[in-house]
Length: 210
Image 1: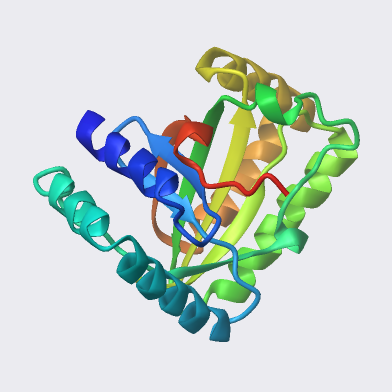
Image 2: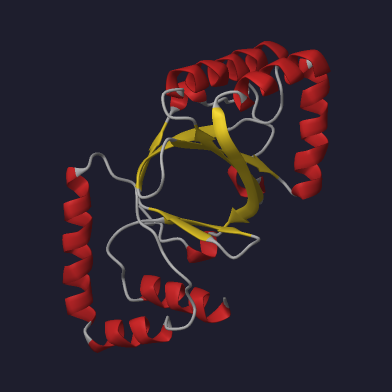
């Protein structure tokens, strides 16, 4: 992991041409998110990377060599943010630099039940707004790169203890019966559900100063 992270930092140092945000999970998975406006932008990203690799020349070859033995596999794909299925508290309790812990939920939806799943998520959003729960979340749909239908959401906290403490408070606000009802509706649309925890990695991110 140390060798892999050193290579990512070297890539940034060498002037990698596209911005990206990095996240790491506690099971050794890394996510690198590059923003695009549309699918056509992928060609532009690939062209810029190819031009950059040619420009740095031998340094690029050394960089690729340094990554050998550090990666089991990698996967590329496209995800799309779904603001209507996301929840932002009226008074966010955390500043961006306080969000040091992330919990991800990966919902593998049964084929044909996408609309039903989205409808249940909207109920979660409406209920959370009504009860003014503390923890917000961003929801995304995976459009390519892995098995589908797949949706995922990300929730942030100061730490694992903070996350589970606030989650318990939110459950009490919503009420056990309503939680059980919405939970059952959610599970009825899924093939399986997975969760991971981790943190933002600003030290491995390529964020332009402007």
